[in-house]
Image 1 (cartoon, one colour):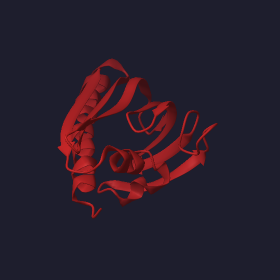
Image 2 (spheres, rainbow, N blue to C red):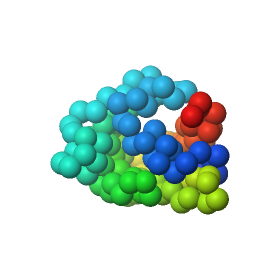
Image 3 (tube, one colour):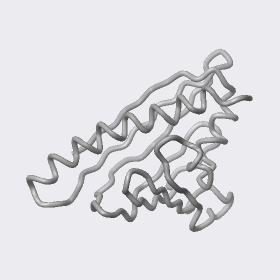
Image 4 (cartoon, one colour):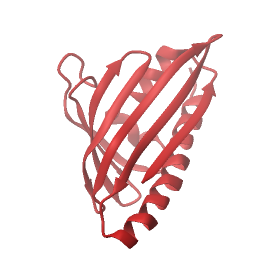
Length: 147
């Protein structure tokens, strides 16, 4: 199983950080993301509940469905389709908390690769390492964006 947990405090207002993290079509602006697009709009907000986004990064193609959307505090997602590795995704969650004009972000993802036994352990470790690096890189990018 992989378990990714990244925390950062960003010197930006919570609404601004949430807006960037929930703008699925623009994830390609982040280092390591080759392409991103919104495949299905959400029911009440285009990036909200029920929205499905496609993220292509480092040879992986992920379709993520938005399962929680509580601006500007929480964004939940579940990987519903992946290639080339099959995922069983239990948790994808970004929570934000305003702290003295800054935004504290906690990004968590848990799941497992569903390949045969030996490959699963190897790939889970790779996903955990690469995912933590990618999430941290995205949050660093947001921290350095001009307001």
